[in-house]
Each structure stands twice: as C-alpha cells, then as structure tokens.
Image (tube, rainbow, N blue to C red):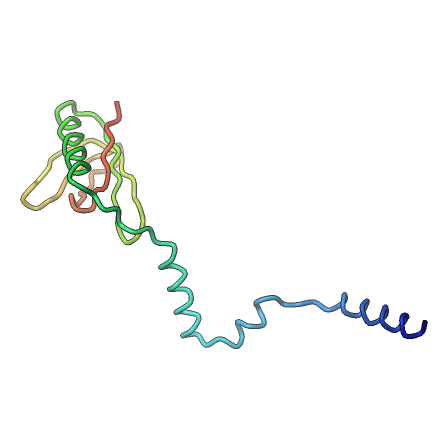
Length: 124
C-alpha cells in the first residue's frame, strides 16, 4: 500500500513539470541552420509556375483582343517568384516586340511582362 501511495505522489510531481516545447531545441541550433530551415519552409510554400499549352495561350490572346476592342476592365493573373498576383484594370497599349503590356486602374498605371501572364478574364 505504501508503494502505491509513493507512485501516486510521483505521478502528481510529473504533472507539475512544464515542458518548453520546441523552445528548448532552438537554443541548440546555429543561426546558419535556422536560416536554412526558414528558407526551406519558404521554398515549400511557393507555387510552381503553371505550364500553358497552345490552347491556353490562344484564350489569353483572344481575351486581350476583346478587352482592347471593347475598352473594358480585365483581371490579369500573373506568376512571379512562386506566387500568383492579380491585377485589375484597362489596357493602354500592348508592345509585342518588347513583350510588355501597359494597364491602368483607378489609382495608377503599370506595366506587365507578357511572359508572366497565366490568365486573363474579361470583366463586363
């Protein structure tokens, strides 16, 4: 019976222990190692560039032509450094030689690279 009471006291003492979780391991890691781990995590979060086939490129071209003729707003989806960026605005000009598009929204005008575009949606 005394042994059982001693075991119960021991279990109660274990409940008082506070574990610091991963904090205790961070102190043992070198700054260079932490940097590499963070870079690896950031790299895993990136989205791969979508592969566009001929059909996708034709649809993008048609939507650009329609938007320029109608002078309507478009939503352009671009891919840069592993992330998608959305732009909304109207076309000002398209330069196929330099492969650039200039657009304007209500606040400013901006230039996009044709090679970065992965989708164009005409907003009516």
